[in-house]
Length: 108
Image 1 (cartoon, rainbow, N blue to C red):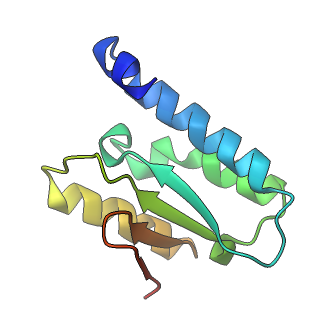
Image 2: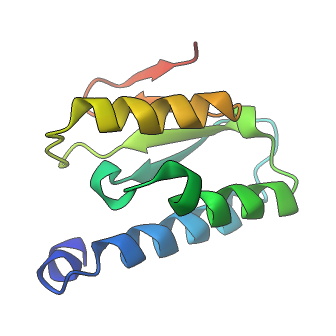
Image 3: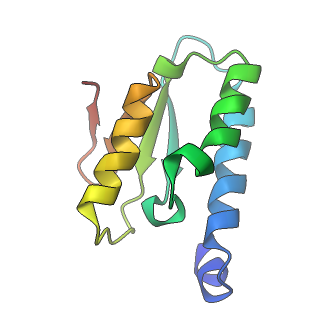
């Protein structure tokens, strides 16, 4: 699906829909970590792109510390500073993040 979305310039929309669906499906999980994959290049501005995701998490009463946003392993991140900005944005809102290939959850 993501390859087709990329060809049709719809990666941003598909990534957003997948994140929101993952949050909805995770709402029944209590007291466990919830891993949600994301594509860093689909988030051009964290303040704008993650608003609906954060609002849904709040609406569903999911604790931010339960959520681990995970950079997908297939993503070739060219702009490390942009990735750092996204990860810092997640962290500043109480979420965790992980690097899929590394398998490490960073909680600072």
